[in-house]
Length: 263
Image 1: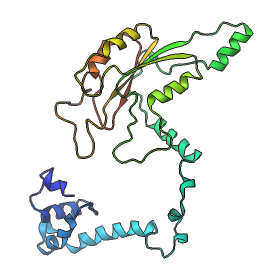
Image 2: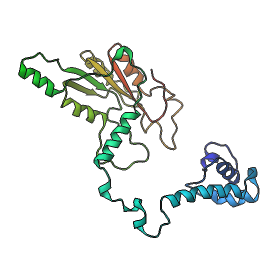
Image 3: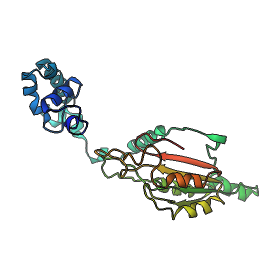
Image 4: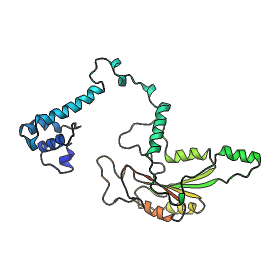
């Protein structure tokens, strides 16, 4: 809440900040600014009154009561009966996967590049056994600085199952008719271009190029806005990497936690 005054410069005093926050619907502060609430009410700062404070208290305590914080025994609150056996269940893993799949947004699909249809190795082996001609393996080049970026975010624990894009693709390669080559190309935000040539060379023999580009926690996170110098585009040499393989069949997978422009 203090950021309203110290960072955003919207207010000049703690009393004024307290009034603005409460009247704007911010009921709770992880700092100590609301200790100035009594003074703000007493001085009538921005017309702040006891009714505003009561509204905030009712909302806060309604939530605390709903979650069973004030129940006398653990047995009366289902949340308090959760143990380690309730974590990382198959249902939880399925929910996490479904959430990830539904969060993907298809922005463009030029020439209907997607979906990429791949035969399973089981079907390829069956064709070979029967004497039928099977489709050749697809050569897939996967590159970009976010290939091994887990994007766990600012607030996270240590997941029991930790799968990066590279991990997932390699697992897919083990069961499908595809040869996957992985290369970083460049870092998220670095002037170094030494890895781009290898991507360009590998792209010449690839059927499809998949680029994992975007941002990571070094660019922006809680308490750190994206630098003006980075702008809304791809930082570092990522746009250079993308343009270097232009003309190939490209799938651009944007990996970021906030908005950015797409080339």
